[in-house]
Image (cartoon, rainbow, N blue to C red; front, side):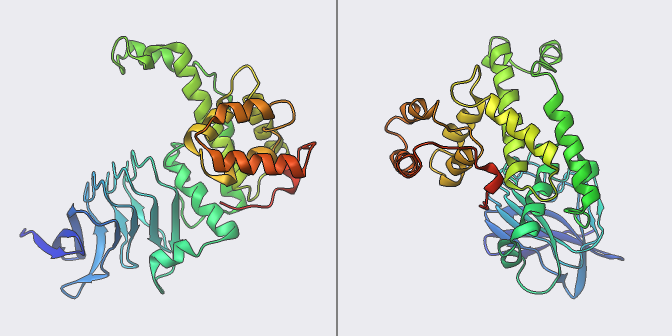
Length: 313
């Protein structure tokens, strides 16, 4: 079957015409935002083919048309910059690994075909925005493809299953999987990844990120689960035996005020560790240091105010 091509703003889409519609088979280019066409040559685009966008490293935002009914294996795998994916608001036939190794994926939303898809996801707020972020985590942090149900995301039953998967990951021993990794030769001999202490620290950082994600998107979060997540973060903040909560914020969100406010609100920055926190920040994050010192001046004795948390990412 003859391969056909059509231009995007900064690239080329490859496709085939089939009896049941157009199949997108490949892409090359440097588009950052890409809205896929509803029709090509007057025929509906119905399938995103196997590995069609594999390794599209520049792509950050992608919108699928309402006409799409199926996404085949590894269609968007290894899109390392992909942050937002907009799907049609209907049930899709999805293959395996469609978003494998899309580590920066932050939002997946199913929206109606009306209007601009990118504008639609950027306009999401409240529970809808939170659901889109939790849905994205299904394909990343949770590694739970069975929860990839865009039409169910945010429903009580879906959130209950999301939390069950999260809690199962948090309950795993920090050293779990280390011996298997060594036996399988997954890392180079002598690398830091072969160091047990390093491995455990990375596992704790993963758990911290997961707990923070859920607390910052607390739609339908049960009080007992909230307390369990808070307890984990506090047990690994500055001044504790291990400090992964603080390290994740300082090293990965060093100039993002909402994360420092989050730590204040959940008691992870407190009277006992305030000086050590400022010392760790050194001269690298002067604006955030000023923010914390202003908070300190306005509120000399910081209390756990997480119950009154009222911010959104």
